[in-house]
Image (cartoon, rainbow, N blue to C red; front, side, top):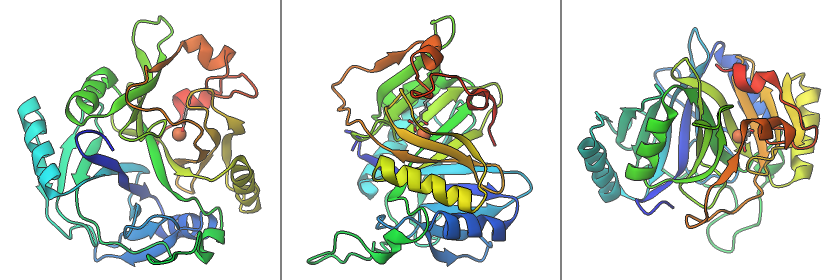
Length: 311
Ligand SMILES: O=C/C=C/C=C(\O)C(=O)O
Ligand SMILES: [Fe+2]
C-alpha cells in the first residue's frame, strides 16, 4: 500500500461495442463472475479471488477503450486527504455520487495529463471469493471456470505527457517508479511502471500521441502453467492472440496479450517480482526492449503492435 493509503486498482470501466459479446468474453472465456447489472445497462464482473463486488464494468459504446480506472484507498479519511492533496497540487477533481456505480461509494475523479480519467474511492461492498471468512478453503469452484484469473492486476495506458503523470502519481499519490523504458534517444521515458504495493506495477503509462488510450488491462494468473492453460482456452474460443506466451524482460512477467471481441487488449499475467519502495528503479534502454528481451524475453523481438495498437 502506498504511504498515502492507495491500495490497488479496484475497478476499470471498459467500453465494448457489443455488450452480449463482451459479457460472453469476460464471463465465459475469462471465467469472471457476473455480479450485477445497473439501470444504465452496465454489466459488473469480478475475478474469483477478489473480495469486492466487481472489478470490471462493461459499458456498451460505439468505440472501444477505457472510460476510467479506479483505485481503492484505505478509508474515507484517506480519500478526503488525497482529494485535498490533489487540489493543492492544482488538479481539478469532481465527486461522483455514491451508488452511481453499484455497491460503490463516492468516487473522486480527475483527468491526468495523458488524457486518462482516474478515480479514487474508499467503499465498495464485499461480495466474497467463495472461500469463506472463517476456516476458509484455499480456493473456490469459481477458480476453475474458464481462464479464471485471481484478480484484475494492472493496466497500461497510452497517451502524451507521461512525465507529468509520473510526477503526479509519485509526488501526490505516493506510487513508486519500479521500472522504466527509455525513448530511443535515451533522454525521456517511453513507458513507466508505477506501483502502490510490492507488485511490479499497479499501473503503467506509455508515451503516445493520442490521449486517453488503453494499451491493456491485465489479469493475474498463478503460474506459468496457468498462463499456458489460458492460451489453450483462448485458442479454443478463437480469441485473437497478440503476443506470447512469453516472458516480459520488463517486470519479468509471464504473459499472453490478446484482444477481447471489441479489440480491447487484455493480458493474462504471472507476476514474478516483489519490488519494495526503497529499491532503485530498473532501467531499460529502447534497444533493450528488443535486443535484451524487454518486451519478449524468449524471442528477443519487438512486436510492432506493442507500440501501435491501442483502443
Ligand atoms: O516491454 C514491455 C513490457 C510490458 C510489460 C507488461 O505489460 C507487464 O509487465 O504487464
Ligand atoms: Fe501488463
